[in-house]
Image (cartoon, rainbow, N blue to C red; front, top):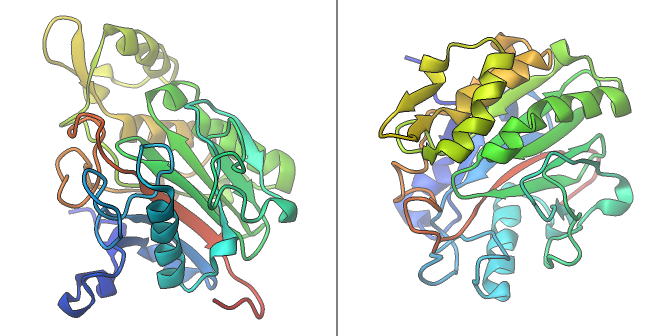
Length: 292
């Protein structure tokens, strides 16, 4: 049995700390690489009210801004980071990659207008910057180059997947920081699985050419359900795009968590009819006398 790479924080599992934010740590990275933090949030342990209860991290879903900001602060506090390190983008289901510089630190932490615009992937070699992005079924992609000390996040719904945002992210890491794809570690976080993700022929017509280009077995990635509809495996498709980008298969970890099957643990836009919150992915590198 494959080991689940995203492990719920022991604090979140403690009945005496039930009000702490629910965090799932990318444990192999956080244990192996000093100063690196990476993971994914659950839906519990925040201050948001229904239907966003309770750790909603999205400012764009109708929740009170002050609740979302407080939830983000709680997550940063639990990680031992200052909130002014929280850096995020206004996601648009594209494949634009933004290189986060020192002056971008804190962008979007408490305002959509201040976020890095029209961006679905963030990369940086800056220390003490916490990259974050938001999900409610889409696929969170993580990248870390321990040689060049570069981290990245990418948000991959079906649109970002067919636009090969994973490949674009690796290319940007190489072009801007000299990263060798073979040195990069990749991870795929909790997201909707093939068990729950049924799409129509409009989506299938966009997904199937990518499968053919990658010379993959369509039967392993697409399961027909009714006429003009099928379930698709976005996690595996993104893994294959990571491999196309040059990341070694042995350097890629993939979560077994399905957000659609686990609405007690995660938000699911599809299973909850769109009226729900957003989880956050995060990754960052700490250095020096940085303190919470």
